[in-house]
Each structure stands twice: as structure tokens, then as C-alpha cells.
Image 1 (cartoon, rainbow, N blue to C red):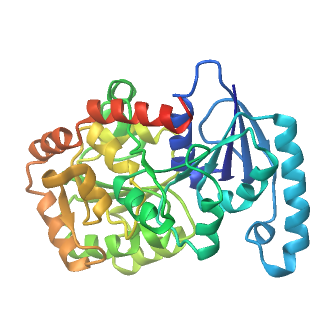
Image 2: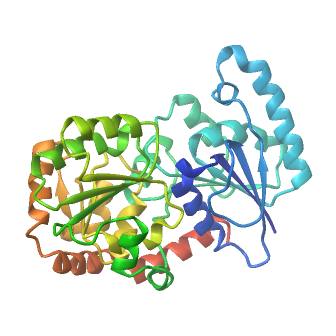
Length: 362
């Protein structure tokens, strides 16, 4: 069996998407051969099989009218490459990739297709008509949370499978560092005395880190540290904000870390102030590391933690400051245990493996 996994882009900003596709592909048929296509950017963060870097133009991919001839010629190239690769299954990364490749499927009648959505997206009438050209037995659509799946099913008017991504709790736990090892790896000094708060993700507007730094500046107590793991276009602006607010010595920008999944034990609390999320895998990683989570009151987070969640209104700096202040006196271990039970990692992992097999046609 041959699977072509088509990703929008490569590189560390897309690490979480690559991780999800890698997890899905790991549950394909044992004899499956995988070829990964990266349309933009370089580097597959995680996965198996060969990699093809297309290095395409974003302007052409987005279908601007003045690039229509180039898009037509590109689709001819892609069709030729698909015929040469002769996949049994195409796994497509979200709407952008689907818009590019679904029009080619009429020329590839024997290929099964799965489109996996990772976050909220704006569907046009043209998108709905495009998906509607293919029966559900040939084109399977999935989303990484029940919240997202329900919204997509409503907009597309077709079944959307919930594939709530989960991690193998046993394997994840084995690779964790000890608390002191993790703190040394992040360069955290041992004698600060206050809680170490963490935030993980790309430094982009939707992650809410600017508001979080504002709230941290309001609530900080002696010795409290905020460790931000991730990189992105807003790094310079966020560092400048921390300096203006007088917390540059307490806010650590640690950048993108390849070994991120090992480092959660360095944290006393994980803060997830996202304005929107498809799933928010960092929430699961923290819970599996026995680190309690405070997060925005997004439906996708409530779906995972239920009544055990510590929720704060999206974008409300004053309420986030109150939540941060409580970290210094909260019972972190008790909350972490409640969140573990709510997430039910073993059951979640079993459900995910079964869903991944169904998505790939198993």
C-alpha cells in the first residue's frame, strides 16, 4: 500500500501538524510505504518515509487571478507526479491542500482521499461544492476535535469524523526528564523560589502571548518566572513588551526546542491563553507530564478537561492576572491529578488509534 501525505509546509512552525500526521500514519497498514510532500518550506519535523520538497510559490498556491495560468501548469505537474507515485491513499493537510489537489481526483479514480482539518477555517460556497463532488466512501473528512468536527459537518453538509489526537501515555511518560534535569536544560536557575509558569506555541497573535505577558506583569510575585517555549514572527515585539513592563528578567524566551516533549517537568503550571485552537496538543502534553493547566475557555479545551479545567475568559488580562496570582498558592498536584482523570489518556489513546485506522481506510 502506498500513502502520499501532502503537507502545506515544513519547518518548526508546523511541528504540531507534522506530529499529528505522523501519529496518524503510524497506525496505517503495516506494509504501507509513505511519501511526504511539503508544498512550502523545508524540513519534515517528524515522520517516516521519503520527503519531496516542492518549494512552490505561496501566491500561486493561493490562486490569485493573475497566477491562474501558473496554477493550471502546477496542477498538471502535480497530476503527473501523483500518477508516477501511484498512491492508494492521499492524506491531505487541511483546506489549502484540499483546494489544490481535490480537482485532480477525477483523473485518479482509484485513489482514496482523507482530508484532516487542524483548526477553524472559513469555507466558501466553492469549497462546499468541491467536497460535494465526491462520495463519503471515497473522500473521508476528519477533524482533530469534536468541536471542530461538528462545525465542519454543519458547513460541509457531509459526515466529518472526529479524530481527537491523543498521545500514548506510556511512551510519553518514558521520555520525560526529571524536574531538575528539565530546568537545567532550559537554563533555569535553581534558587528563584517562586513557581515556574510555562507557555508553549508559535509566537503569533492567535496564541495570546502578548496578553499573557501583560497579565504576568500585573500578577508577578517574587521569584515567579514565565518561560515561553516557541518561536515566531512576534518574538521581537513580545521581548520589547516584557522590557517595557519591567519583567524582562522574569520572562524567559527559550525559542523552539526539538526536545520540547521532555521538558514539561520543568514547569509548575502550563498557561494556554489561545484565542482559537483546533485541538491544543500542548494541553495534553502537560497533563501527561502531571503539570496542571490553566487555559482559555475555548470549547475545544472544555471538551478535553471538562469540569477539571481551570478556565479563563479569552483575552481578559485582568482575569488572567488573577489566575496567575493563584498559581503561587494553588494545590498544583491535586489539580494535575484531577485533569489526568478527566483527560483519561489510556482511553483517549485507544480511541485515537481506532479512528486513525478508519481514516486511512483500515
